[in-house]
Image (cartoon, rainbow, N blue to C red; front, side, top):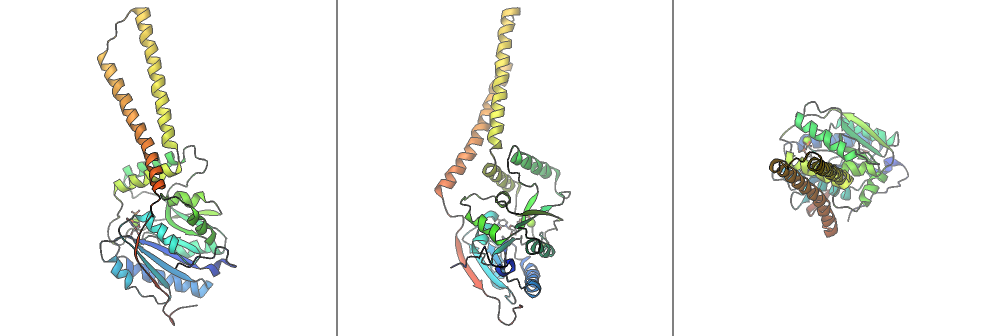
Length: 335
Ligand code: UDP
Ligand code: MG
């Protein structure tokens, strides 16, 4: 069904490039994005003889996205439109794109225009001319994001990389290019819970980070709520680090140590100065704190157990409602 890419094609350019675009309620952004990508593809074909296909993965959009995708012109570029049976989330859309990408190298790119198409040429040149396997981008700054979100992001990466042998580059985005062998490596990873930023750095090979200035969304609003960001962060943390478990143990030790010292102190007070136990307030506080810490720790452990459960169930990551493959219209194809 799917043409598997040739990871060891004789020359990298022979392998070709699949541009994977996850789409969720992006009807207004698609025509302009597609025109830009098609122009890029024609350029690559003409200048480098690089065959390009665009894989749109419709992640159960509720607007007209799918209809718009079906109507996109395929002059000069191969097209695939994969649509999900429901909204499975961006990470799932990326997995589907990776699974169906048939050209070799894979480029992930958002549909909302925030990932500047002009950078694609640079990423491709890093791969073809300089032999990088993973060219990923990182936001140059987060000045225009709310302070609370920035703090949250900073804490997240600090926790994620705390004591980790393999550090995940902070602020790396999903906008990245994978060489055929890097894409093949990512496909081999068996886990259901996939945190792409982490995984594509974890696989190794020759990696390079390219800072970029994220553009404003052209139309619509970001579909990430604070809640879904928290979700993705927990996902990332628990699949890439045991830092939360470690924090829990450190907390536990500190609490137990404190309690032990406090107990000793109470005994000494009684023996030396014969001070009666003053009681209620301190007991109450200690009980509540210990109770709280225990709940947190149980929650942390629960996250990991939940992860084990979901890996164990081994459910598919997504279901495809329909898939349409359109070869570039003959005659219009350049190169
Ligand atoms: N997206 C998706 N499924 C979702 C949410 C988002 O496929 O459930 C896509 C969306 O269409 C866009 C990309 O993921 O192409 C990034 O989404 P968004 O712009 O909402 O996120 P942000 O740029 O704020 O991180
Ligand atoms: Mg966006």
